[in-house]
Length: 372
Length: 127
Image (cartoon, rainbow over all chains, first blue to last red; front, side, top):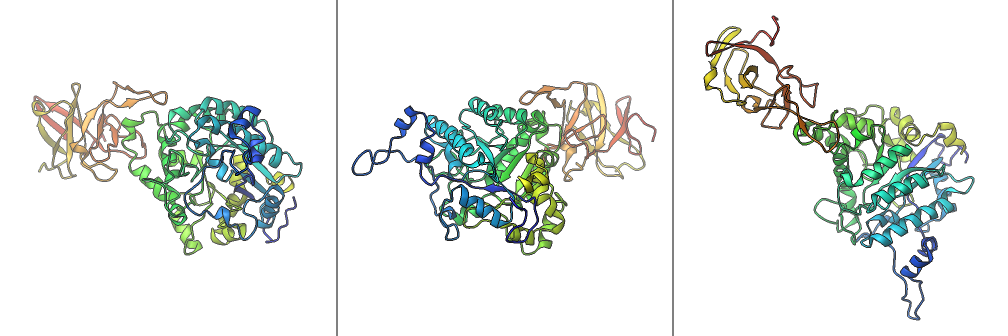
């Protein structure tokens, strides 16, 4: 991949939020064992069109994944790679689109098999091509934490698999709950960050809801409130001691923008006192855990009135952008371009936001990012 | 109100174990408490959000060397603020979970049953 782009932005840009999906579910089903292929069935078994189970979980409102700027709604490898290059990024971290909901399938066994199939599909179709600009996320079947840990050890051997995706919250518990410990232990053992993407909890036909109090009725509601579940998981991870057990573990929070971070941390600090009784295993302040262990993708970035607004809001938390990393959200129709985010955030943050933070997360030097 | 740096802070027989009593002084409210036979004195206002830590309770702190476990540290008492449950080590005044926060503590002693507090001195020190 060249480092010159159509938007004229610099090289070494890493996009942490690229959503890849299947266009036809048979792309995924063919990675199942023969027995599980029988379980799902094949389309057109019967003359009136039935015969297969729809493997998708979905949201109950119109999602911009279906309106991607007039282009094909679900781009394949070549088209998404081209869009990534046009956007001004050199590397894109794949985090799944609707597939990310799969771990929350109400049929846990089928969900587990589909997650494994999705990982194999991602490796063979998106990561294996020699010139692939993509890096991958291991989608774990989090209803089966011990099995998920085995998968992390298995798929982390692929040089382009760079993180673990918790995806749909299959057990409906905040991710700091001890039941998920095997996943974090395996991530820490293999040096992989764990990404939590808002909306991963949000399918209408799965147990957990993406928003406090229920499922949003419209995309606008969901989008406006999309940081809610990130706050829940962040407070759970901190207070349940995940970062005490795994001091070097990094967790990437994605899909809720970044403006929520100061208010969240201030509230955590203010209400930290009870942790003395309720979480005596903690050794640091919430703020310190957050800065050490959590990174936040800019996707979907809030529309602040000015760059100075960003400085005033976030300076108290991080005056260099070192906990933030650029994420576009492509190919969804409301994705954030490199140029757009660059024009929005303070210039002094750009080195960290557009490559430094993600480079540290995924062990990439700027030279490797630019040159493949 | 007590005047001067050394004040009287009531009768030790009136103190209930672990329940602070607050007296007024020139420097502000001062709390005294008895815990396992030893007297403690500290500022009655919490440095966190100016809560009434003098109306809190003195207990042993909870400690843990592994996530999900809890034990008690019997070697030192803490006072717990009733507003947000911030805890302070009464030996040092330091916040238990937030060492950046500190509660002012004072030298305290008893003569016969009367409690005295030197509001110009820290416990165990002359200055």
